Image 1 (cartoon, rainbow, N blue to C red):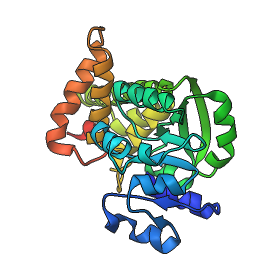
Image 2 (tube, one colour):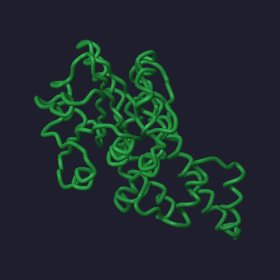
Image 3 (tube, rainbow, N blue to C red):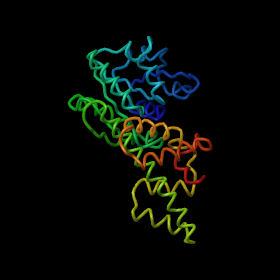
Length: 269
């Protein structure tokens, strides 16, 4: 995701400063003109708008809180954005830290997968100051097709976890229906094609498309989706979520076989 975002900023004429734990992954971007930073702090000091794209809470906390992290180089005139999908507890904590320091922070998780990042058509799910968001929107056009505002800081992350939860439940349900159709002796091609029209929808179409042909490279891994489902469940420990519980159990089991495959491949095991 980070590569696609960076590439589109470069294509639109922006000066881009990048830090990554693995410099080998940046070789192609360096050839295209990115400026390599020695640390998140240095990248933050050089840039006006800072985007964090990490894998999980642990890596995010390191990037923000370490002595050479983002917060060490941040000042009030800069815009700080977390584009990762993280837990609500960590997102809220980070938002509070930024607020105490007088820093401009947005949680802005992305949807649209790898293809959306590469094509500059991501959908950004935003939490933060709405008035300040308007000032940043012209820059966000370089990487996004839509910018959707959900409320105060932390709201974008909350919606992203709900979105991924529903997509996961829908995908698992679609696979179950296909298995039922097979047992009934129905033609799976006819069933799948018809379900993409009735009930239809993005998740149905994606599940059926990937059932027929595994996406390579993958769009969103089983490992990442399982992580996001766990983050959602953390927020609802004492709230009944039977569908989430069942789906999370299925994904945890699938991790043994397809952790690094697209999450939609859960219907092929």
